[in-house]
Image (cartoon, rainbow, N blue to C red; front, top):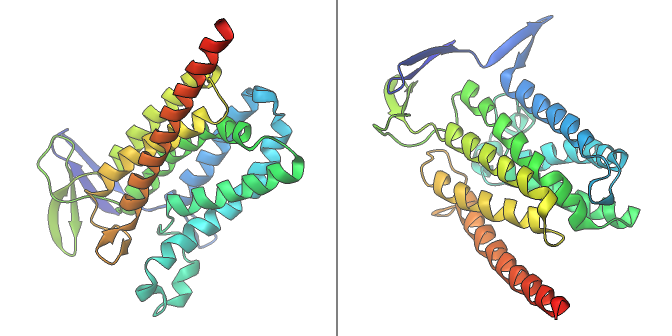
Length: 268
C-alpha cells in the first residue's frame, strides 16, 4: 500500500497495485484495467456492426487474434529498449504484472496483424482500421490508469495544480502525473474520432487523425516523463511520436486537397 497525494486538488489516496489475491495468486490492477479496456471496446464495437460494410463477427475475430499479439509485441518493444536490464534479469521478461508494456509496440503488432488478416479475408484495410481506431484511443485512456496503481509513468518535479505527490527511493516529491495527462488526452481523441466516424470523407481518415493527434500529444507528454525508453540520447517514443504526427498530418493535408478537388470536379 502506498500513499499518493494530489495536494493541488486536496486529494490523498492509499493505493495498492494488487487488487485481490485468489488462492495466493495476486491479481494486479494493471491487468484488470487492460482486460476491462478490451471488454469495453468489444462491447462498443458490437454497436458499430456493419459500419463501413464490416460485420462485427470479423471485428471480434480479428480482435481475438490481435489482443494477445499486441500484448506480446508491447512487451517485446519495452524489453528491446531496456536490454541492459533484461539481459541481466531474463526471467523478468515474462513478468508484466508490474507494468512494462509499450503502447507503440502494441500498435505496431496490431497494425501488422490487421493488415495480414484483411489481406487473407480480402477486406479493405483502411475500413478495418477506421472501425477500430476510436476504440483504441478509449482503451489507452482506460489502460493508463494501470500506471497510476503501479506508481509508474510519472514525470518530472512540478508545482502545477495537478501535481502528484509520491515517495520514490525514500524521498517525497511532487511530479507531473503524465499517466493522467495521457489518459485525458486519449479520452478527448476518442470523443473526436467517435463524432467524426460517420462523417469521414475518405477511407483511412479516422486512422490518420488518430495517429497524428496521438503522435502530437505523446510527443509533448513523453518529454515530461522520467522513465522513457531511450535510444542513445533520444527518447524513442518521443521521436516516433513526432515522426507519426508529421507524416500523417502531411497525408491528411494531401487527402483533404485531393478530396476537395474531386468534389469540385464532380460538381462541374
